[in-house]
Amino acid sequence: MKNIRLLAILPFIGMLAGPILHNGVEPYILGMPFILGWVVVWILITSAVMAVIYKYDPANAEGDEP
Amino acid sequence: MSAALFLIALSAVLALGLGVYAGRGREMGLEQWSVGSRGFGAVLVFLLLAGEIYTTFTFLGASGFSYGLGAPAYYILAYGTLAYVISYFILPPVWSYAKKHSLVSQPDFFAAKFDSPALGVLVALVDIVALIPYLVLQFTGLGIIVQIAGYGAISKDVAIIIGALVVTAYVIVSGIRGSALTAIVKDGLIIVVVVFMGIYLPVHYYGGIGAMFATLDHAKPGFLAFPASGQSVSWFVSTVLLTCLGFFMWPHSFAACFSAKNRSVFRKNAILLPIYQLVLLFVFFVGFAAVLQVPGLKGAATNMALLKISVAAFPPWMVGIIGATGVLTALVPGSLIMMSASTLFARNLVGFVRPHASNAQTVMVAKFTVPVVALVAVYFTIQGSSTIVALLLMGYNFVTQLFPALVASLMKRNPVSKQGAFAGIFVGVGTVVFLTLTHQTIGTLIPGLPEMIRDLNVGIIALGLNLIVMVAVSAMTPKTAMLPAE
Image (cartoon, rainbow over all chains, first blue to last red; front, side, top):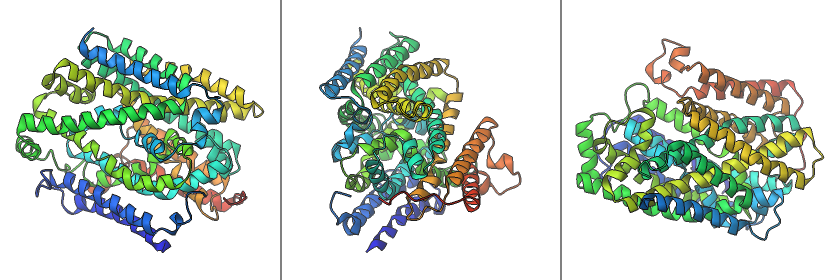
C-alpha cells in the first residue's frame, strides 16, 4: 500500500489544470469567479486526499515513535 | 490615547506578558530556547507552522495583492496547499534525523547530512540574507498598522522602533515557547476578525459575495481572471510550483518543525493545514471589497487597503481590534525570524570559527545577536525603499535553492556529494542575485519565445542551473559517506 502515496500527485494536477484549461470568470463557483472557486474546491479535495493517504500509508501504522 | 491605539498597545503588552509567562522557570539552553526541547505536541506545532500563513504579509499583503492585481493573488492559496502536500513527505524524515543528531537549525541539518561544516556555513549565510527582508516586511506592516489604526497619533518611524523593541524583548525573555503561546491568541483573533470582515464588508457594500464579484467583473472586466501576458496562466503555474518548494525551506519554518514531540504530527497537519489556510480566502474578499470602496491606492500603498476600508466601515474600537490582530501577526513570525537568524549566527557562523564554544556561550551570543538583527531590520524598514519587496522575492528564491540538495539528502542512497550540493546552491543563489539585480525576465533573457514561456517565473532558471551543476559536480566527486541511517 506504499503506492497510496502516489495519490499526492492529484492535488498538483487538479489545482493547476483549472486555470490552464479555462482562464475565465464564468461560471461562478459558490459565488466566486471560476478560477478562485476552482482553487478553493481543490483545497478541499487536497485535504481529503491527504486524509486518505494518511489512513492507508503503512508509515502511520508503526505508531508515533520513529 | 484613542480607543484604537489603546487596544493595539494592550495587545503588545499582552504578548510580552505571555512571552515572560511562557519562559519563566525554565533553564534556557539553546535547545530549550530555539526548539522547545522537542517537546511540543500536535496543537503547538500546528500553530507554529500555521503561524507562517498568517503573517503581516498575508494579512496586509494578500488583501493588498488582490486589491491591486486581482486574479494573480490566487496563487497564495494554491502554493500553500501544495506545500503542505510536500510537507507530508519531507518533514517526518527531517525531524527524525534532527532529533537523532540533536540539531537545532537548518544549516546543522545540511552540515550533518553531507558531513561538511562548510556547507553549513553557506546555508547559514543564504538563510540570514533571506531572513532579513522577511523581518523588514513584518516591521513595515507594524508601522502601517499603528500609523493608520492609530489615526495618525504615532508616526510610522516611532511605531517601527517601539514594535522592534517589543519583539526584541519578547524573543530574549521567552524563546520559542512564547511564540507558540502567543500564536494561540493570534490565530484565534485573526480567524474571528478576518472571517467577520470578509463576510460583512461584501454584504454591507454589495449585498453579498456573489454580488460583489459580479459588480467587480462589470466595473473592471478581466480583473478576476489572469491577464494574457505578464502575470498570466503560465506565470501562475510556474510560480505556484516554484514557491511551494521553497515554503518549508525557510529556516524558521524548517527549525520550527524540530520542536515537535513526534513525527506523525506533520502527517496529520498535512490534512488540516490546507483547510486552515482557507481563512485567507476571506482576506481576499476584504481586498476585493476595497477595490471600489477605497479606490486609488497604488504600488506599496495597496498594502493599506484592508486598514483603509476598516477605517471607512467601522468605529474606532473595532479598528483597534483589527489593528491589534495585525500587530500580533507581525510579532509571532517576527519573533520566530529573529530567533532563527540569531541561532544561525551564533551556532553556525560563530560556532564554525570557534567550534569549542560551550552551549551556554552559544546561547549568550545568540541573545546578544537578537538586538543587532532587530537594529539592521529597523534601519532597512525606515529606509523603506521599494527594493525591500525585491529583496523578499530574492529571499524566497534563495531558500528555494536549498530544496534539491535537501531532497537528495533524504534519499536512501544520497546521489549528491558535498561538493555537488555546495556548488549547486552557490550557483543557484548567484543566479538569483544576478537576475534580481538586473531585473531580468525569461522574455528579456531570450527574446522571441512564445508568450507562454516568456511569462514563466524567472526563478526556474536559477533552480535549473542549480540542479545541473549539482548533478554534474556530484558525478565528478566522491559520494557523501553515509552516516548511520536513521
